[in-house]
Length: 389
Ligand code: NDP
Ligand code: MG
Image 1 (cartoon, rainbow, N blue to C red):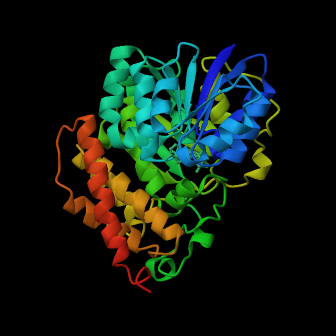
Image 2: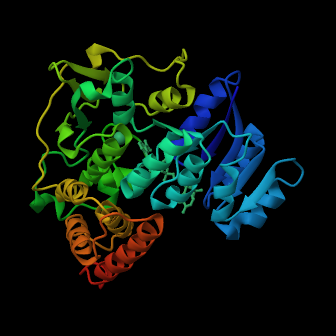
Image 3: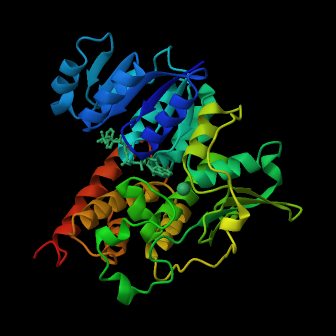
């Protein structure tokens, strides 16, 4: 029996993880569930899965959750600090990091510090502070198993291999809803349009990141830290059908790929069950559904967020942290129709040029850079013609 703490249980990854858990009551038990503001869903999940504790980080919702669960033995905590405490509990065997954005960093770092095994969906944690997180994990023996489908694919391809024998990894990208489009089209796209991902059904932030290709840029940085790769060992290829979830190329030229239908439940299950594989009834891959598998170079000129992420990775230090913070602000602004699609890259680029570089940041430096970048990006959002309308 594995006792799980699911951080961000009300989100797209969190709810799918609970579906996996529900199908295997003999293998998993829920120890902790956490949400930010969706009290209603958290309460319903708590009643169903009977965790030892729940955390609602938006303190204004604390009383509501507390009251709804008062007739149960479930402990209820409020606020961000509680997250950092509960992940350390001895009763937690594995932490699933499914909070979105920089907000997920501190609790994952606490879990790493406590030497926990972590199934990691929250890629922003590694984008911002991958160096510190992996260093601490090596010290405490914490294990990080990727949930992100591309990284799960790479992880699965590496089973039984020596990392020294890897020549490069090739991350596949679907290209999102605007694959093949040019700036004259993109300047007019709206959030509702960008939220229609052709292959994956995900939370709003990552769906916009997929439309701008920032998601693939964040995933390059995530791969660098997860697998200890050099920047030049990480490639991206656009593969529209999302059947191949990524490739590993070895020093003898041999390529391994992991293939499957695009359904996050599979990498979620693989990560939480690792090192076991569990039988399930998920839809099977059928070659007849994928008549053609296509591959093309990404368009770095049009989808500048991907180029900016690659640049941030090459600069290193606090650059990916700044990129990430500016991106979170611009995605939020785009969702609220305050900036247009192309302005997102302008704002990220200007923020990267503005925040003072730090070569070897501490955690406090990262927090400070994140704050500065957010403030500056927010200023730029306010100057957008859309925001001033
Ligand atoms: P969602 O937006 O669907 O869910 C986010 C979760 O995080 C919710 O439970 C939300 O709580 C919680 N949350 C939001 N803000 C805060 C905060 N400030 N403090 C604490 N908790 C917070 O996101 P996804 O599930 O799509 O993504 C989660 C992570 O997984 C992201 O990092 C994403 O990049 C990664 N990922 C997602 C994939 C997917 O298919 N969705 C695929 C690969 C990676 P509430 O709703 O209660 O406010
Ligand atoms: Mg992915």
